Length: 462
Ligand code: HEM
Ligand SMILES: *[C@@H]1O[C@H](CO)[C@@H](O)[C@H](O)[C@H]1NC(C)=O
Ligand SMILES: *[C@@H]1O[C@H](CO)[C@@H](O)[C@H](O)[C@H]1NC(C)=O
Image 1: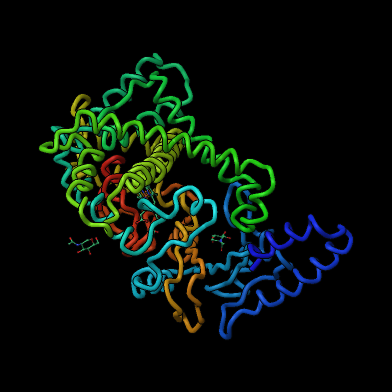
Image 2 (image 1 turned 90 degrees about the horizontal axis):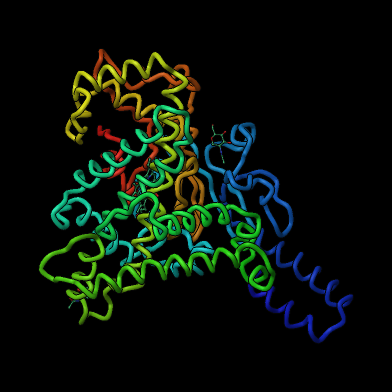
């Protein structure tokens, strides 16, 4: 509704006098807003909204959505929040989250079309696609990552190789204090480079640094006021200057980077052996080249590749950095972890994914970091695929769905001493113990695709 209005107002603007237009537009917008705000019967309750902007004041820029505890208490486990043209529902509590993401997974499996992402990705790739495209891209990526007979190196070997370089880089600091941010970022991104591009980069490599800088800048700009406003009012913001235009340019640059790598792969491509994700994907394109409805094409290859970077780098490296900080702040826990590692591996042996089963304490500590610092606090948004009912409330098709994972991880009824770093939560008689209220990777059909990979990277399994 507002999108159409944006262009209407712009068209009128040129022919009418500003005063008349302003008054007319204002009355019209109020009326449109009134219509828009008529939610269907049985729609979930929620806090006060303002005309036009709805609950935009609940957006805590850079941090996501902020809804005070009292609000959740007052309106219950399922509340509505409106942001401009976006209608969303926030679900709190394990039974409801499970009911939505697992019990009714078909109805909640989609991602919403958020304006910025629609413009940049056109809903291709892994993270934002829906329907047949998503099914095909996800299935292909999972099997390719899992089988990982890619080239001559297994996934585990690629991670171990990178760890060697990471340790070397840390060693070069000669025991002096240093900021581990970039070294860890480099190492984690390099694992994704190795998987997708078939090669790791030297940490000083110009091309590599350019890639990382772009990814980093994009994450920053995406949280800016202009970008949030673009999502809420795409048509209007399209005409206005702001950082969102910068974001579009940077994405184009990133896409060209990947397109370039793909072109180079094509030049020395050997259909008989896939060296990496891109090679495997080129085989898939070849296999489906006579099928016009297949989603295996260059656009989806570029988007899926970037999605692996986007979803895999910042998440894993931020978690690792929190882990380091917790270790520094809790020397007695650090000592126990070190003792366990020393007894299992000694000083020289590389960890591998089979070992964590035996390293209960270390595993518990890693889970603890993931619990305390779940870096995707409200999960990645989903969308209601068709009209449905949840906990007695009506959920119309296309409503955006957020699930509060932080609330699970911080629930004082579930976690004694929920705000302190206490790995005992994941231990029972010295054995590792799984916890139900632990969902940093979410659940259901759309659960984090890197869950297995990320866990190998953080050397944990459960
Ligand atoms: C500590 C590390 C990580 C955390 C906490 C994390 C968490 C998440 C969460 C919460 C989701 C949303 C799931 C949902 O909608 O239900 C997700 C999706 C995803 N993650 Fe991760 N992730 C991590 C690492 C990784 C890594 C290393 C990769 C790369 C292989 C990855 C790839 C993806 C992809 C491709 C999706 C989209 C899946 C889809 O839409 O079908 N993640 N992740
Ligand atoms: C073409 O692709 C679609 C979608 O992937 C698939 O359902 C269909 O079976 C394919 N047709 C052929 C002839 O392979
Ligand atoms: C999610 O849960 C946390 C912890 O209980 C709370 O502080 C936060 O306000 C909640 N966010 C939303 C949007 O409900």
